[in-house]
Image (cartoon, rainbow, N blue to C red):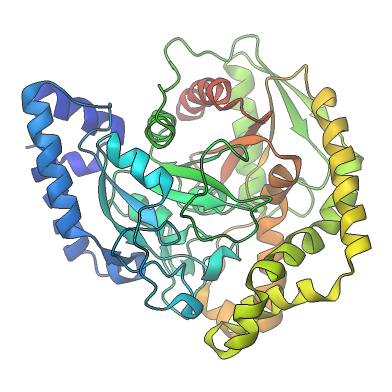
Length: 443
């Protein structure tokens, strides 16, 4: 008997359409897996079993009547605990929001539900989504699938773990500085950072709305494309016939190649070779203009984060993990004129970047320069937490600063990924390219 919980979300959807698996049985299979997994309490903040079983039953009836709404109709997925769920606690991993119960689903959850997906539950995350590591001593720290002693990457840590540990078909996270791509990378998944404004943030607990985006974490590019389709209520891209022959990649050299750990460096070099073997042209690209915004990124992020959360933090500072709180508080130290000038500089760099890269199908780089850090070391050494968090976010944050659509793909080396970046709102073209790259990396 096939264990469909091990399949991709797309395969599950096709099996439902063929009548080979019932959404009710599939959903129950995931709950059985959750119950059997010793680490599940570190992955799921809370389950939504009553809702899920009702949604699965409705999907089962539609399948039997031949009126399925979407290729993922009846497929169970997880949701990061910053997406509002009506009548269910949504805390965004923070004691500041303890026992907060919204009265309406987030807009992307409403859209995905209308498409027929099944909401399994809410996953743990970095506190208020403000860390690339996934360490959260306030609620729980999700494990990395490749190292039981390491963090999963953040901030969508539980979302990644839910998929990597076989406890969800796919997960929905958010990405402000790498929070979809980093945990996807470290847990050998596909992660899609969508363009700003592509998917609604209504009903999502904010961090930095200038950079916040919604994104799927999945087992395949096809799954990511289908989940994007479900959340925006539009058809998915046609991935058939995607090829790398004649495609051109720019291999970014500035910042992203500095001080790489051995495994990510080796994995990236092999990935580039495979892309070339599949027919792609790959050329080096320097872009020193990004160095200024990269230096300013701490200010660009923390000023807005403090503006959003400063009053709540001042009212209850002891509710927070100190390194996270201190990162927020640093946003109060910058003056408005310097902040405005930094934003103007970033806009100028963006205007230079897209013409510079217009002749390429995508820009590529290693997703993360390092491997997952050990949880114990992060807790014991405060300075290490700060430096490792910033190093972890280094490569991914460049994509957020530039504002593109970005996908990370597993390379076949554990916890090592390669990222492909395309212009804003070019997700469908990017996903076709990523589908071809995925095949080349698996060859």
